[in-house]
Image (cartoon, rainbow, N blue to C red):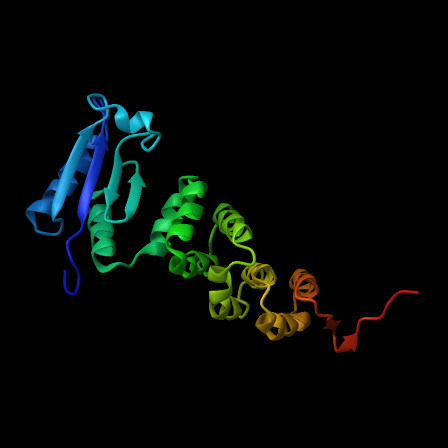
Length: 225
């Protein structure tokens, strides 16, 4: 792999597991090809300490570099994860994998451990993400309200407010409010003229969170007497 270092891998298997052999074979091929530097294999039936520690709830459980994956992995998928781990990229794909497998707590912990990867999580919003993934992203961002990592993601959030997807524009605008950074006011004000009423409503809420007042359709909001 050009410009990358072969990562290490760890595989937990179980006796009688129907998919463990496939994953083991795929990882072994990566070692033989020099794509993986090291492979450690643990049978949880023989060494149950992994399961008792709560780390491994099902097998096959695979760690390739920094990525912890569950379930059957095809040779092509293994090659992709090895490439991502070796180059230090692939965080968006990793977070999509975790959310798909309902491992929301691990997404939040990973973002806290690697704050710079919040940007990669946010990229999922502009990829036709299913509703379940959007809900997962929102849950993680809610936990980061007012934090420095969320404020640091301001440029990416502002870019997402320009998305063709109304849902993405609304989500990004809401996250700007959660960031609590006054620099987000201009991006939120721009969405007051959005063609979608839901987006305009979120923009008003965001401006309120930021201590600002808004206008819709070019007229100042008037207090109802």
